Length: 425
Image: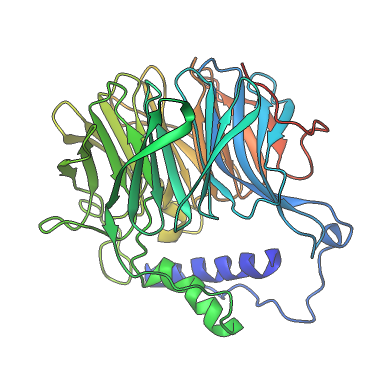
C-alpha cells in the first residue's frame, strides 16, 4: 500500500502541475504487478511518517504522532512518540494496549503540561495524565478527528472533525476523567465522503482523488484558543455553514460558541491560477501568538496570512516561494507556527521544506529543506528550536537564528524499549 499511494500522490501532483500551467513533462511511471518491491521493504526495514507535533509547556519534551509499518503486509503501528527536546533522544511512546486504528493527526498539551490530548482518524480522542502516564478517558466522535486544542487555563477542549463539526468539552468536577460536552456545532459543509473500503479498486482510487481535486470535504482542519480565553478560531476545507459568508476563519465567542465574525481573504490577492481559476480559499492550519494579538493561517492558496486580532484585520500576506517543480500543489501549506516572541512565522507543506518569515516585515528569512511533505511544525517555548515532521519519516530540529540542524530522528521502528507511557512531569 505504501508504494501504491505514493504513486497516486505523484500522479496527482503531475495532474495539478498541468492544470496550473506548469511544464508538464511525462507523468510518473505507473506501478505494475511486475514492479519489484524495494529491497529495504523486503527485508523489513520500517517506513513511516510524522503527522503531528506538540511541545510540553516547560520545553523539556516533544510529542509526535507517528505511523510506521514494516515489512510489507505487517500491520501498521500508530503511536505518539516522546523525545527529549534538547537532544532528540527517544524517551518512550503513548499508545493504547489494543491496536490503535487511527493515525494521531492532532496533539495538544494543557498549559500546565499535566494533560495530553491525542486525536486520531479513527474518531477517537484520548486524554492522558502525563504526570502518571495514565489513560484518563476516551471520547468517541462519529467522524475522523482532524484537530484538537486546549484553552490556556485547561478548562476547555475543542475538537474538529471530518463531518464539519466542532465539539467543545469542559473540564468536569472530577477533572478530565469526567469531561462535559457543552457544544456541538456544524462549522463547515460540503460533499460528505462515503466509505470507500468496499469499492472496487478503480472507484476507490477516484474516490481518493476526488476530495483533493473536485470535492469540498468538510474537514475542520484547525482550532486554536485565544490565550486570554475570549475567542476560539475554527477553519478548514469546504464552505462555512453561514448564510452570507462561504469562506474564511470563524471566530467564536467563549464560552457560548456564538460566531462573532469571519476572517476572509485566502484565495484572493494571489496571481496563481489552478485550471484558469483562483485557488480554493481553504485553510489547513492556524497558530496564535503567546499574547493573542497575532493569528497566522496557512492555506491552499500558497500563502500564510497574518491577522491582527485587536482589529480582526489581515496585516501580512506571505507567499510561498516557487518550488523546483513549479507546480501549484507543491506550494500548499499544511502547518504553521508563531515563535514565542512573535518575531517569526514558520510554515511547511507540500513543497518539502519549512519557510520562515519575519512577522513584522514579511521578509522571507530562510527555507529549510526536508525532502518531502511537511505535516507539522512547532517552536519550543524558549524559542531556541524549530521542529518539523512529515512524510520524509524524520522529526527534525533546527536552531533558530543560525538555522543549523540540531538533531533529526527517524519514524521507523520502536523509539524505545520502554513499554509504559513515560511520566512527563
